[in-house]
Image 1 (cartoon, rainbow, N blue to C red):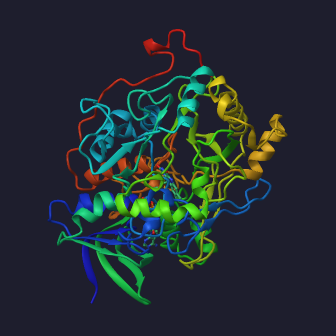
Image 2: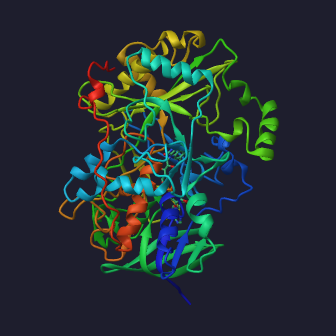
Image 3: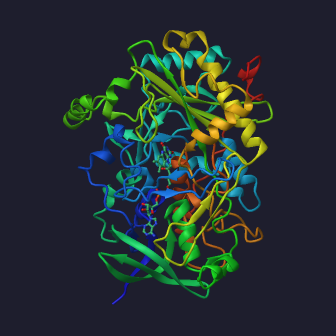
Length: 561
Ligand SMILES: Cc1cc2nc3c(=O)[nH]c(=O)nc-3n(C[C@H](O)[C@H](O)[C@H](O)COP(=O)(O)OP(=O)(O)OC[C@H]3O[C@@H](n4cnc5c(N)ncnc54)[C@H](O)[C@@H]3O)c2cc1C
């Protein structure tokens, strides 16, 4: 006998967790979440302990372990792409950095045809609904104070952070009290998805508190193979669990598998470019050539330095220290393991042609790559940097009709003149900051890329060889009106064009990547989508001023980078 639910949500990740909560809130509708990964158990230190963040990536137990095709502008390198395969999705394995993006990102969304209800004024109330910004002034009207996502800030107490912020000011950039508040541009401590020393994932915030609801069912280790589409409707979905195939009937199907899995599943189900689908043995059902196109991401590098003073976190990377650090965390959720260490950074406009920051810096008081590979130095630190709204575009395509085969994807990083120029600027701005007097007592030399990398060509060559993804793939089923042949999702209903009861709510639906880490934007999108799906009155747009370079009165005489 087939089961039936009003809403079947594919993927219990960031967006899926928000939807699972909001759609089951009034108790009237039955909601099923099908999650391919296992549960995010409270005992699982690699998920719950913030400083364990490098460990889940690359492990099949937590990670889908995607890889790009050879990148044509990076000497044919394949770039590894981690994606959370566990309840909470990527929010259970991510870096926990909380960035809304710049208000102008949403003005850009809202300026596209049919997207007027996605401008900043319409999105801001949903950011406020999702967050509880614990460090913000309770009267701060830019920030939310009672949402499910509890956010701690910084504290960025390590002297290296202070030196970095001071150096940024010496280099002519500004401080800002809150990059998610009135003013993003500038340097300061960052908010993080960490609460009381534990990861504040989307599932911890949205699903665990409500999993007792009778109308909410969460099935983990349930891998969805395809959506059964008949004409302009989906009957339900087929999934594999414990080695058996199951069919579930759905009033509505909502794809929330993320920017890679969602277009993959749409294509497997016959939604995409008919010619491509036929070539891989899939019967085309809905002609939507935009599925899998418009792929966007952030590429980043680490610029690493050695430090002559014994102030960095480098010694804590030693295996011999880990038991003690782990014990402090287990006993009291305290110590170096209770933070993600991405406690501060900044946003910069690297040239005068951009009107809002195109570079983001994360500062770390330790020199270590995301995969845990540490720099050979007793003490060290690093900045992560890269362009934030590159005009490079990639695409994603299934290779066959086998749902277990990873799709082909190419991002075309470094393919455009703008991208290349901004990369050179990114490295030069980083070095300019690190060369300031405030950093002098702490900077005993650049480890990577090192002094041999100086000219534009040398910089680009190093970026092509060394850069990694910042893990923000997005925009592969973009919102836009039906009149746009490359749009996939209706911005007013989140329905896939041409289908009456299939929606997309996750990072794929973004039209453009935002200028920071994208977890908060995905949560916002899902909060807003939940109201659209339930046909609730949307939250009232909040018309509020925000910092705009050159317009803000404080800018008279400001030096820019
Ligand atoms: C290692 C890493 C570090 C990151 N660091 C940060 C950071 O510090 N700050 C930040 O803002 N962003 C960060 N990001 C990005 C951010 O976490 C993601 O963009 C965001 O979580 C995406 O949300 P989503 O809902 O679109 O997809 P996901 O959260 O990835 O959820 C998709 C879910 O769907 C499930 N699924 C997929 N296919 C199927 C299927 N066929 N059947 C059933 N289930 C399926 C997956 O297992 C997953 O649980 C990071 C990402 C990664 C991977």
